[in-house]
Amino acid sequence: MNSTVKSERLIARAPDQDDLSALFSIFGDARTHRFNPAGPLPDERAARLRLENWLSHWQQYLFGTWAIALKDNPDRIIGFGGLSLRDLGENRHINLGYRFAYDSWGKGLATEFCHLAIDFGFDTLKLKEVSAIVRENHAASRRVLEKVGMRPVALVKENPHVPASIIYSIEK
Image 1 (spheres, rainbow, N blue to C red):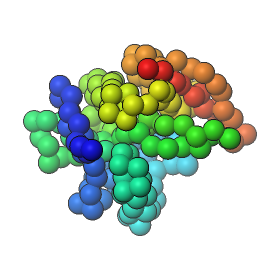
Image 2 (cartoon, rainbow, N blue to C red):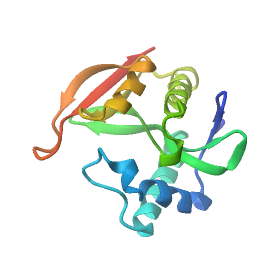
Image 3 (cartoon, rainbow, N blue to C red):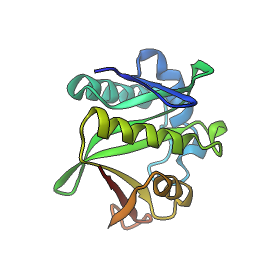
Image 4 (cartoon, helix red, strand yellow):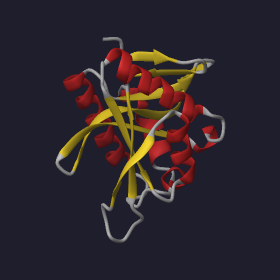
């Protein structure tokens, strides 16, 4: 299976060890975790563990989180996102997730990426459904998911001290 996918402006490829610095830069930035109660990654060790988990997912399932760049600057990673297995209660979902560098926000890249990932899920992986989880108070991410055709299907209260999350879904 090809681990690289492309859209009009984006190229997404399986991550590698050279992506550690970009991963920590993006996932360690408090601005990119405004709606994440766990907060940004605290250090490079945590980033390394996240990268190892992604690489393991790729080895086991042949898909996962991609390193995302603009086609016109493929050496600069601007985000990470993709499809991964996620357990929610008693159910296992194929979860669409993404996080972009702060300077990449507001350009339609998240919407473009979500279309790319969903198409990959349906066309290449032959999935019947893709889900995503977003905090109830994260209006921008909710708009992105709705733009790509996802609809809210359930509310999940993971922690009593933080806003609820909404499970969005799209079926082929």
